[in-house]
Length: 170
Image 1 (cartoon, rainbow, N blue to C red):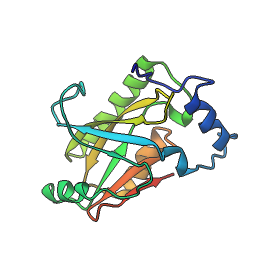
Image 2: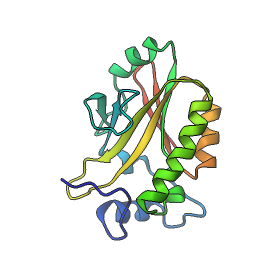
Image 3: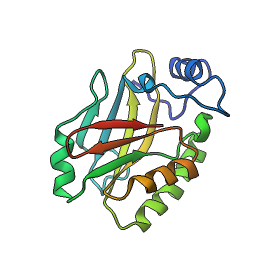
Image 4: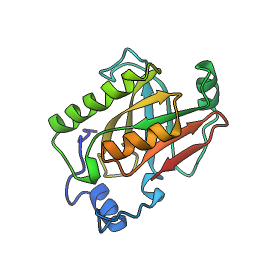
């Protein structure tokens, strides 16, 4: 299956997104949009996201993932954040613009000195080929995650906790 690096107007993801966000200036967000999303995380040095994944988890009907707890504890961290800079304000952008935005986000993440893993969110919905390259930053403060969310125009990000909880913050 070929993946498309942004939401195409008229495709399933775009239609579902727009149904829930008719007024982007005052977004209301429905976490069910992410119910069929798979998050994959690669080794820190696999920036091309081509090797074996360290782990993958699906939000399909679940709001927890036990394996994340041991992963976080191995880093002596209580939480992690999956975040991207792709498609700010949910407006589709060309791949080159999304990649440039992610490089800016990566520079900010690297400045923290915390472990960063390349990641990707992918739709598991039949007929939908949406994905967004992301980063999993391990540790840090929730307030910093919110600052990055606002700065990079993201409507949501995902929080992972040591108890296995997976939370969508919007």
